[in-house]
Length: 471
Image (tube, rainbow, N blue to C red; front, side, top):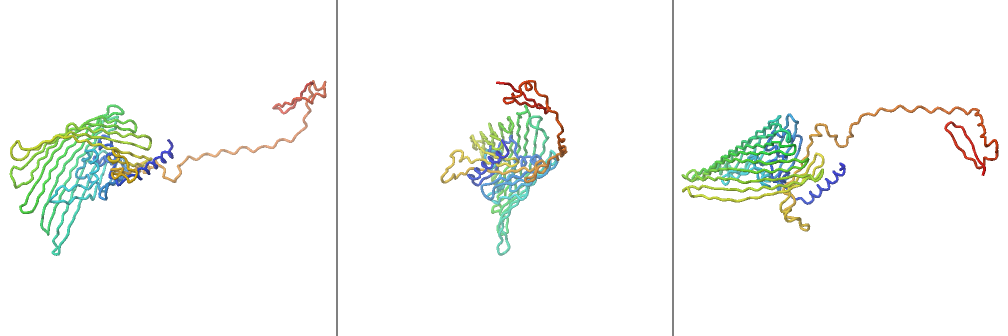
């Protein structure tokens, strides 16, 4: 397919998508249900050392309202690269993309308010910075928000929230299909919130989070890798209500999960699936002033499964889809007698689908609204569910920055062509001289009138012969 034809069709498709889309939320990974074995630019938020892999790139995710969305800009080379993100909401739980659809959509929102109802103020990300140097990388985030009103006496009433978060990432630099490839990262977050009324403390809270994630690919052949996932979560929350009486509450949670499954690559097409297993345990103390009121909840996910695919239909249009199923078992032990508590078993299913338009180094990705797929468009009156749940625009300028792409409007450099010497000038023909008359043919000497029906022929030597015959 010619470049002009691809560009024309791509622009037409993009125009159609833009015409029917509503206000959107995020990107490519959502289209295949958050499958972590299909690599994506959003991996820089999971493994910051991959910033050098996705260097010299700008990407914007569009949210459903003015407080949702994301922008990512990376610069650098293979040895050192850095990136900045605007309004990324996953800083307190960077590995929260584990549910089809909602996990990725909520990751674009502001960080949640962890200390409600005592402190309802949610933080807002101020800085989200990534740095990679070779096979190691770092990510640092700072957030802050404040709402305060002072009365006539100068006493303030309001709330504030501040967080800091950091990540460290490492990769062995393996190549899929050729050698084992591993990416590992760990994250630490601290969140502080407080509320005050008329200058007096009303409540406060602190949250400590520790997270870790491993992703590995073990090559089986050039097209197949065995994918491995492992995740660790530790979380401690404490909240104080400074009313009368003062009440403290808190919780502690520990989670461990893993996954394993095949990851195929067939040229531009990808298919990935993995089974998951997760254990979690959370203890909760609702009131520190009351004895023996703690409760504990044990959660087990078995089985879980995530399957996804991404298929290029041609050189500019891609479709993708994915589904995830979890069977969750939960058992809660309540305070008091040993037999007091509750339990539940339930299955949850989630799916998603998306499309992508790729034109050279530019790409448009969108995750479709499930209502659009289930109900179809209302051509008169519109579809209230919209067309896209999430949309993203990405442009990679790495090739242009390295000089491998000729800027638009400038001709490509070409080798100079040596001029051929001019042909020699034509020499004038020599003046005509005395040419002896040809000897008469034998027949002509015997019959001089035989030329009326004769034939004429020429030779390369320039002589002329005439011959004829009688009727």
